[in-house]
Image (cartoon, rainbow, N blue to C red; front, side):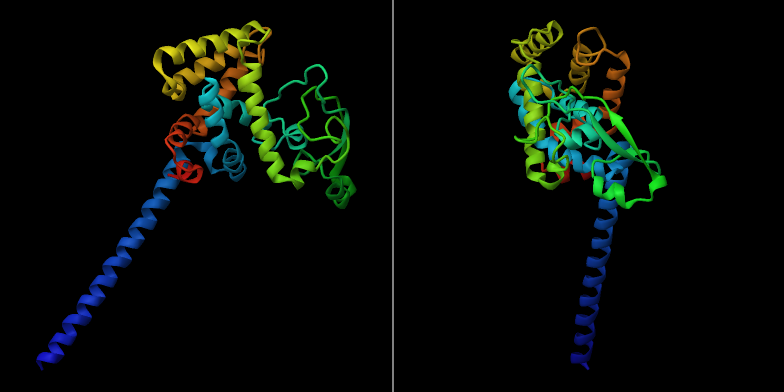
Length: 276
């Protein structure tokens, strides 16, 4: 009888432990899902897979480059996202140029192209084979002018109409091109060696600020937005339209780029920083 009672006690203890573990696991899962949903609700752009994919390819290097060159990483990421349509624009898909950097003298630029537009999605396509597989009444071919943007494809494709799908077929090269673009922007365009007064002043001001307050000031969201104002919205600037500053600032806010840059600078992996 004692043995039977002991047996029931053991079974009861095991079942209770399993029940507790199950409840705990469900609570953790619910908590993680709740945190992710809350995060995505707070940062509306984070719910889009292509936005997550784009920043998964760029965030780590943007933080590294920005902290080295004294450019707010959140500003780099916001400009890149806006200018490239988070990597979805046809120019950035072909050239890898996610920051709309103009081709300087002697640099290759994307020539005029005739591209198919999918009327159902209203998107330009760079894959001609796929376009030709669609019903003829669903596609219209449109002439596009020279982009005047630097083409980051390697030789012999850069600056030509050949191999428009190069980066789509070489994802590692695409990631390297993204890094190259961000480095060019941060180390060459926004530089005290720049002949553009706005860029020269912006670089000098950021260097002074870092010298006074330290590198971590680059992770301050207010500083990132002031940087945007310093390089745009005026003649002979990165983008002369005043609305540009507003658009890029919205990307910064709605993708949570200030927090993302701060957490990744602290060593968090992108996925963890993006989802938590």
